[in-house]
Amino acid sequence: MKARAIRGTALSIISFGSGQFIRLVSNLILTRILFPDAFGLIALVQVLLIGLDNFSDFGIGPAIIQSKRGTEKDYLNTAWTIQVVRGFVLWIIACALTIPVAEFYRQPELLHVIPILSLVTIIDGFCSTRRYSATREIKLEWVTVVELASQLLGTLIMILVALWLRSVWALVVGSMALSLINTVLSHILIPGPRNTFRWDREAFHEIFHFSKYIFIGTIAGYFLQQGDRLILGRYVSLNDLAIFSIAQIFATLPLVMSFQLVERIVLPLYRNRPPIESDSNRIMVGRARALLVASLLLMTAVLGVFGESLIEFLYDERYHLAGPFLVLISISIIPRLIFGGYNFVLLANGNSRAFTILTCCSASFRMCALVIGIQHYGVVGAIVAPVIADILAYPFQIAYVNQYKGWYGLYDLGLLAFGVLIAAAAFWANPAALALILG
Image (tube, rainbow, N blue to C red; front, side, top):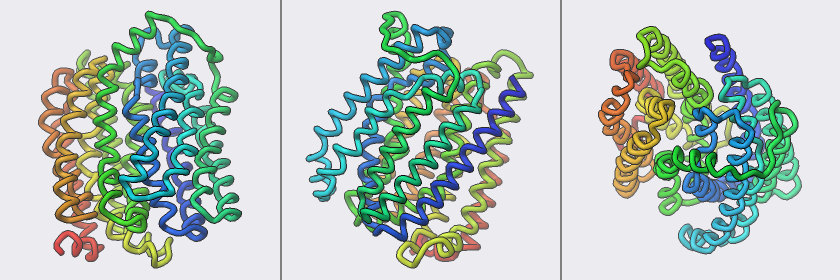
């Protein structure tokens, strides 16, 4: 298990690093071909699609990973059938919401973009459950290959179409191509039983019982992850939203990586080595978690200190305001990097109810802080609000996670002190970011 966890971590880092490099190169090329408004428009559509995905999440991946029946063919095929049906339902809902969303954001072009781009929900629905089975066993070699191949080919298609059309439709076509390639390769390359339509009543009830709280939790998770863009899209221009989104792409790299590592490594590790079972388990998991968070904080330090210089080097002057935003967002995610993985202790122990309560609690704090912050301070308020929300939610995390001996207070204190030093260094190196906070 330890060897697989180390190998899985290495593969996840390779996948993440390569994927983000492809994403960066794509972004640099596309920002020179397309206008900023195109990225702002796609950001609004993504807010809708991610919302639909979260509002209908059955937690199929975590269900397969934690279930004792997670290797049974009937269970896997029932999960796949649910996933396929869900994809079609999401597309229908997206089409129904097209007019209200376009009117809310005052963007008529969304009337055409949303129904087409939302077809990715149908495509993704057919993706093989083999990826979850591989994650369950921490055998991620072919999962990594599929992810990188689909992203590389999808990005190439996006760039070629952008050179041809020079409009937002290049981003639409590229996104659909990426999803299609990922789905096809998941069936061809990842080892495992072939998915077919199947309905096992007991499997459905088990998935539903496990996921009924995750369903609520992922709705709350949507507001945690997308609340800033959801509200900002109403109050700022597409140009400003695009600049904010570019800063967010860079600044949240450690956070996105933490999500991948927690889902692929930490969650299976909690499941197979529960801290509550023995002191040796608790020590091993605690050290692994501390090493992971410290590594992510080092990434944040680099982005925070060199944020403004990085943006000015990579982008033309239309995007330079993203530099100070990048610095501020990098600092704002520090509490979440330290505290965010605790909720998965609950999922690993099958306690999706407590997981949902904690997620809803965090989302409530964050949305309240975002509404107040954006109304009074605009984009800066959207950046600062998550810090307040994460700190307020931390005591509730301790109360739940400590039942499973999953809280590591001393580690958190040391990591938080490291985070404060990172914030101080970032403000010292980037006075423009500090001026935004003080001004």
